[in-house]
Every structure is written in C-alpha cells, then in structure tokens.
Amino acid sequence: MGAEVVVEGLTKSFGRQAIWRDVSLTLPPGEVSVLLGPSGTGKSVFLKSMIGLLKPERGKCTINGVDICSCSEHKLYEVRKLFGVLFQDGALFGSMNLYDNVAFPLREHTKKSESEIKRIVLEKMEMVGLLGAESKLPGEISGGMRKRAGLARALVLDPEIILCDEPDSGLDPVRTAYLSQLLIDLNAQIDATILIVTHNINVARTVPDNLGMLFRRELVMFGPREVLLTSDEPVVEQFLNGRRIGPIGMSEEKDTATMEAEQAARDAGHHDGSTNEDLRGVVPQMQPSPGLPPRQGDRRRKDRVMRILRSLPAPAQHGIIDSLSEADKQRYGLTRNPAGVRGRGGDDTQQFPGGNPSGQRIQGELNEESIARLPNSGWQSPPPRGGRFPDGGR
Ligand SMILES: Nc1ncnc2c1ncn2[C@@H]1O[C@H](COP(=O)(O)OP(=O)(O)O)[C@@H](O)[C@H]1O
Ligand SMILES: [Mg+2]
Image (cartoon, rainbow, N blue to C red):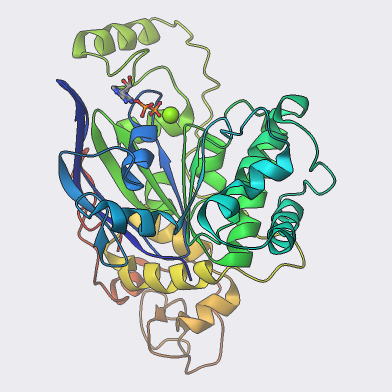
C-alpha cells in the first residue's frame, strides 16, 4: 500500500510574492487525488515543495513520520526514493534513448547489475505500453510517448507515491484519456498513492478519488470527489464548468466591478461563448482495464467516505450513495427494512450499520431520515464559503 502524505499549514512565497498559504490536505494511502487550479496558482510549486525541491516558509509535509520540510538532507534523500515524479514535459534527457532514460534512476540510486536493470526497465516500459521503443530518442517520439516514458522512469524505483504534473498538457483528449487510464491501471497494479495536478476538467471529473482546488493563494477545498463535483462554491463551479463568467479572471481573480459589468453584459444578452451546459454532478469514475485486479484504494476509500458520509454536504452524500453498487449497499448495511417498520412511506427506509433483517435490497434513493442515521464522524463541516476542509478529508 502506498504511503500517506499529510500536508499541514504549508505556506510558500518567493520574495514578496505569496504563492499559497496555509495549505492542509491528506493524501490517503493508495488513493488517487487531483489538485485543480488555474495556471499560475502554484501547482508545480506545490509538487516541488512535497519532494523537498522547494522550501516552504511554514508548515509540514509528513511521510512515514518524516517532515520533509524540516528533515536533514540525508533523510530527505531517503524519503525522496518513495516518490516517482512525472514532470510536465517528461523531463527526459534528449541525448539518451528511452532505455537509458528509464534506466537512469536505477544506475544513479542502486547497485543493481545491468541484467537486473534490464529486467526492470523492460517491465516498466511494458507497463506503459512502450515495449519496442527502447532505442528511440525523445525527439523522435510523440508528446504522449514522452509522457509515458517519463512515467516508466518514475516507476523504476517502485514508488509508493506518484506525483504527476499536468500529465494532460500538450496531449489531445484521446491521448489524455489513455494516460488517465494508464494511471488508474497503475494504481490497481501497485496501489501507490497518486497526486495529479492539472487544470483539465475531464481528468478532475473522471479520474480521482479525492479532488481539491487551489485558487487565490489558498486551497479552496479538498475532499472526496463528490464534494467538489456537486459544489456550488462559485470558484469551483466556474472552473469545473469552464465558464468565463465568475470570480476567476484572465490573469487572476476579478474585482467586484468587473464581475458586475460582466453580469450586466450577460443580462443584456451578450453571449460569452460558453456552452451553458451544467457539468456539475458526479459522473462514473474511471475503472481499471478489464483483466486487472480491482483497486484496493477504491475499497479503502469507500470505507473511509462512508464513515464520514453524514458530515458531508447533502448533494455529495447523494452522489456517493448513488455510485454504490448493490453489493456495496449490502456491505454497508444500507438495506431495506421490512415494509412499514420505519420512515416515510414505510418501505423505503435504510439503516446503517444495522444489517438487513428483511434480506431485501434498496431500491429507491436514501431519504433524509435514513441518511441522518448514518454515522457522523471524522469530517469537519466546510466553512460556509471559500475555505477549505480543515482535516484534509480524512
Ligand atoms: N523558482 C521560482 N522562483 C520564483 N518564482 C517562481 C519559481 N517557481 C515558480 N514561481 C512563480 O510561482 C507562481 C506559480 O507557479 P507554478 O507553480 O509554476 O504555477 P502552475 O503550475 O499552477 O501553473 C508563478 O507566478 C511563478 O512565476
Ligand atoms: Mg505547472
């Protein structure tokens, strides 16, 4: 199982330029998380801070009990071996073929023999679908292949945590979908903790277990995907719908006067080019390819989210329950009571964790009363506007 990463109160600036402050979140072990944010909000700076390449002024980032922001260089070197990082452009050495690029960390950090290295390199290249391209130079292959080569290189030291910086950048939607599938498949195979930073809405909607968003130098939210996907927080809603109208502007946030002027223009009938589809809502999550084992992180996440379910906003609760399979509903004791025993209408009430006395399965949606009987622990309610979930979604 991948390592848990706990970020607490992380604050970073460059000189007088504040990048973000007081960022707290937890990457649950073996789960896939996505951190969204408009360009320039400090997503790459965040990833670099997580592996100790940049030093935040305040806060902690703890992995296996080691705070990488304050530990010794020696400890940092050790902890970094837990990470596999896919940098934005693949960060391959242009003069080395793919084989040597992928083998590089093994030759740098281990004393493995060349035959052992060959076994590992070919195994990882097969995992990312690049077998046969070992002798190609980075300049001879497509952007998508370069990313996959970067991913193979990130995998050779068997990372417990994989960080991906905009894996979709420069890729068309189809290649992006393939790469997303690859990350989900990898997670199913090695159960690593994965964090993807991106501004790609599709990736955010379909890939992760947990979703967060950086904006205005803060972490706006971080929690189970269903919370952001059903949120009516204006920043999150604008971003997930790709709208021009809203608090996010061309370069940074808009001032009130600009927002009012935009609203006036819209009221007067001006069309801003957005399709006006409402993309809010929980869509099915990408699953591992056929033939692969189910994701262990998915099972752990369901257990975790069901424990905190009742403390989540109502639309997120419904999103979560709607995405449970019949088997899941049985497992969590969300089963129908004998007719007329309890609840409005008498036959549509489920209970948790009270078992399944009638042996019948749930058919309708959970009603308010049955949700009220679900356990309520571990999640602090979000602040009314803007703020983040203080417990990082644990
Ligand atoms: N090493 C650095 N020194 C000074 N400023 C930096 C450095 N790295 C990034 N920045 C600044 O931090 C801000 C956030 O950058 P970045 O993390 O690359 O944004 P994103 O990845 O979200 O697009 C930018 O304004 C950028 O200019
Ligand atoms: Mg970046």
